[in-house]
Length: 314
Image (tube, rainbow, N blue to C red; front, side, top):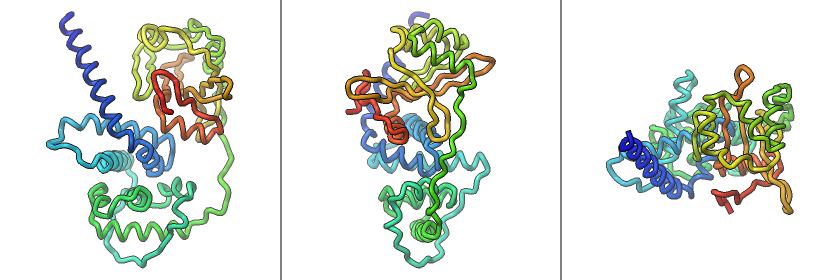
């Protein structure tokens, strides 16, 4: 049993080391990849899920490669695209095809910087049209590269992008974005008790709100599958001493953890809890998710904490 335990620890340590090396290698593409995932899904939340799945898959598929990955950007964007197309197929959504029908050239370069257009693509184009347009016009892949990523032809990509440009140019973006926000979880007594315990630094009271086998996950950081693991792991040294409060982020109620010093309040963490029968059964943290935290900070108008051991984003 002890030998088996030592082997498991060795595997975990070696895998973690390799994953860290992989993340350092693809770090230069992470910002563009996150934006691509957000635009192709039409949602920061779905985009974040796709980004996480892309990183996990791209690392997990490495043993299946016969040769080195010479174009890492192409590799990451192809996996992201294939993953999203597969997801849409499972949910019976129209994928579309990139037909080579000739299209008159239309220059829409003046419109391409508008965030509202990019975030609306998913609802106005087919899945493949959205991918082709983003890859070629926004992320500067060649038509040949795009054809390989979306599994089409260069001619199909050219024609599709022209049609997408024309369709986008015809859309009306003159109306302001809706400011309607959904309610937070203020009515939920468990969430309110969690906030009170967290803000008072009362770890015992906070833990009493979790089910015995609650899952605690910090994406790309750690996973814990019981209250006992939490006590021996992420909460071993108690609570951080920051302030937590509820906000609505991209139409979704979340808890943000704020640190405050001489330089003003900054976002330390973003959390989401799932509750069943009055107990927290799932606790998700975005503490390690740089692109997500930075985008959320911009959305909420609060600076992000860039240096928070063990991470340093400065």
